[in-house]
Image (cartoon, rainbow, N blue to C red):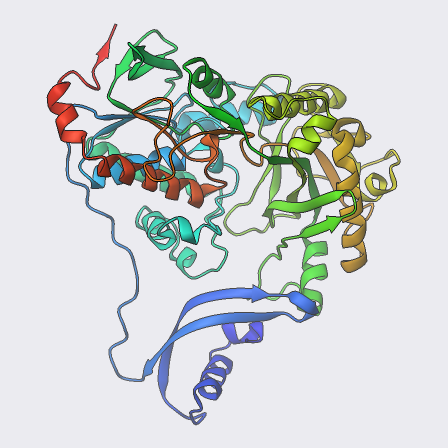
Length: 530
């Protein structure tokens, strides 16, 4: 454990290395940082560092700098259709290409450049494009919502391989060093574009503005995907990786007889403080230290009425409107790579499971009960804000005291906020959030002050539905050839875990060993028909 000064003071780092290795302080050597993390627990800020050390004058060990992965050009029929160009869909296509299996990605939203125009219209004028927004479009919801790459999914697959792929496509090499890697919403779009161009050059077909509207079934067998524009895409295998907000996809899967179930999720608010306040709370007298950067937090509280936790914390970031359906208000957070903004924001949410659904009058055995509850709260938030995606908000001090706010502090949310009673939206979920914030204010004085704000509604933490699949083959048990994938199918929760799931599904398709046989049997596979 090191004082943060060691990261910016070579002499101090050398002294720490010599002490650790029991060398003399005048020993001559070189060093390189391999891994770092910040530990601010107990009010004592220290840095954990993993280093490479070698005698001075010797050739240093090769630096682990990933090179762009070569994909062999593919021709011939498309064997797999992928619904969704988020991290699950993109990495599924990437891994299929590594196996020599050609795919076509169908994305309802626009490519990144065109997608920015819709985001500007939403942020500046409150005009929502329901087909291309913060949730839909190239790269999925993560493209413009932060670029966090931290995951606890190490057991799901090769996390390092995913991070190295991002670096190969232009992400900063620091994501291989930081314990909580983060690309930044200003850099991630370029990385995703580079990946898409690489896939396209290898023969992966990608269509934007192309909404899938259902499955093509013949005699109960899967034959492809029907598009909203009337076209029919044919292929023997379909990967459904739509992201957490494509609720119409879940509806047409159910109509096709695909097995679904309710999945627990979480709903709450997005809380925002000044970044200086969070730096002071977390780092004390070391707030502003150049080796530490903007402070973050990860909070979990068990309280008498349930539980509450922070979600997707964005240091130096902004609150954005992440709505994907008209007249339903959803907020999320984002951070640029340098995290130098005035504010720090985070989701702060409580669980929604069978108990909460029953209390709200929904049947948990209905796979769509969570979606209905989510929609009701989002609609309530939109109406309470007065429309145009203006958000209802409350100071944290007033929220925990259950009193209305007369005035609100400055916020990064561009559409604006209006003083509101958030418990009118949250209902039963307000109690665990209040109790947790009171406890946190005891542990972190000033956390629930009148200078901090809660903005509604943080409701897209994950998809409330799971599309069932086999544990080993990852295929739908109710429809052969269908592969549920990623966050929208209930199997991931973030960029890296979604990418890992995409890789796993591609491997499962390859392992099925049917690609070449099906291509020979179906020479028209992947072609469009009127």
